Image (cartoon, rainbow, N blue to C red; front, top):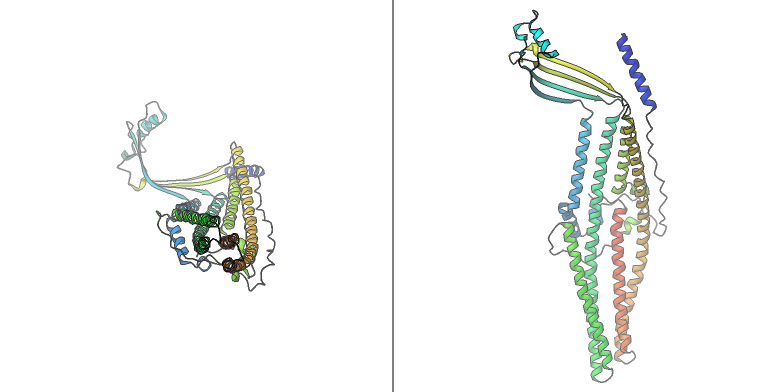
Length: 482
């Protein structure tokens, strides 16, 4: 090996050794806490393994499915999320090109007028006096042009993995953005489904009041007839009138709530008002799904919120590795090739072909403090990403556990409430007969009507809450959107 090459190798090795000693270590990715088994002993014995659910088999109401499509087509939040995915994809494509050599093709034209007492001016004058040059090689000393046309290339050798980790970070951020889009879509679908079933519940509540008001009118006719023959006083008539007005006011108030919910649905679907087509059935509990053996880890890690945080954690780890690689020397290679001449007449001659090869090794010295701060920030970002990932796993588990337990409880409550309504329906008939025959007073008649109404409203309330619980169950089970 020649002495110059040997010196270069020695100095390069020494610089790399000194640099390596000062490079901090990247924190390894932590493992999330192991999830326990679901405490779901209240359900019926399992019937096979749970293999997942998708949107159109879980939500079968065609009117609701149409609203889902309208959300995808027009909701601004969903459109913004799509743009963010496109941006992340562009960052990913850009990171891939950073691993490749750059190549610029172009032309440069310049001109200089050198003073007679400058090195260039004296050198050009002296060159023209040489007997070793031809007439075409003579330089214009009054105004010296320079023509160049060709290609330039530059390539940073990724010896320490900085560019590779930047690409890996961009890839994981893109995947996280895709999962984020799914999460926004599920959240929007959940909001729409809840509003849709709110509307159905309001329809049912309105019908309950209207039906009970019609029953009340029958009882009111009986009271008025009794007053005519002197069997009851005017107080009974006024009591019934007051209760009738109370129910009529509730009917009008429900209509106001229906208008409000319709407006909220129109806003989410990006339309200017209009009628909302809807069915008349609340979402029932799908016990076929709940009675299967659920793999907790598989379900939790199929949820877009958890998967998105996982990819974000991987991206932050790659960013920390890239920040660490910045402490090592930067190795650059460059090349230039093209036509270069100081006269237009000789520019396209073969003798004007020129080229250059460059190589560089740059070791960070005074900016190491800045690099260390950037590395510490990247390490902190990784820790934050892990905490968010752990939080999403914990939230997902507790949410699934809670919803499964609530579903079973709602099932028992609904059975009891349905029986209560049946008993009170019979009680209304009995109270009317007893009142006519004189074995009950009008207070008992009013109370029977109120009890029946309240029982029906309570039943509807629990049916509605159970429906909302089932809507959340789709997200908790990592439901697929396609």
